[in-house]
Length: 292
Image 1 (cartoon, rainbow, N blue to C red):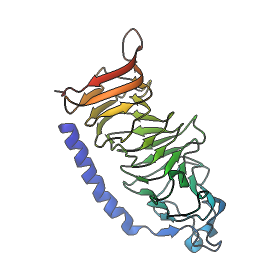
Image 2: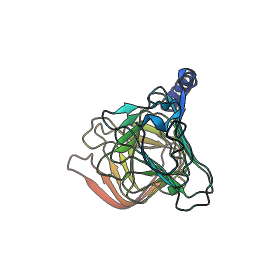
Image 3: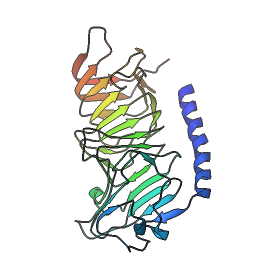
């Protein structure tokens, strides 16, 4: 109970910060500058004429990226890792099945205030028509970002992750092969998880919402990291790939809020915390027990 109450208090605290953060920032809109609409083609975020007032937005500036009319790819700045403010990217209904509105990272990006990134694709469009490409980099969010009917991709999957300072939910986003999602503190469920995607529970986390389909690969804890990973499960969960357990303190990494809940693993259940090395089970189902 104390863990869940702590998480709720954290949400309340950061909500106050979120309300305050927008009062002193200016919003800049893509295509509102001297270069014109910029609705089709390959572009750089760092070109001043692509934005209103010919100003390249950086934190705490707000960012608004609207519709593409063909295939458009906006590349974020290169160089040192950077921070962005309130960022909204959307695509309205289109009759063109070839249209793709895409934002590609060219370096690591972090948010410093919660609830400040929103990707919204009209429900009549295909999810692949609004794309956020990690491109081998790490996006470090903060609490629930809106990922509505869009695609999260990693075109350089050897590195990079969709991570969070605290709390993450995937809404109706398609999580493609090669995307690693790293959760801390609170997992709000969601996502259409494709084979080859992975969810990593990096520390003690509470599950606050369900995943409509199945997760693919899941790690509880991080290999070689002394921080204990654990998930307090409040919904039925199906894992179609492998479940890896890293529990350096040997604290129970899987806890259930009710005895009727189950966690089913179609792939390998791998416990890496035994003194004799990893133990592996195939096609595993665990029933819930209330933790004391």
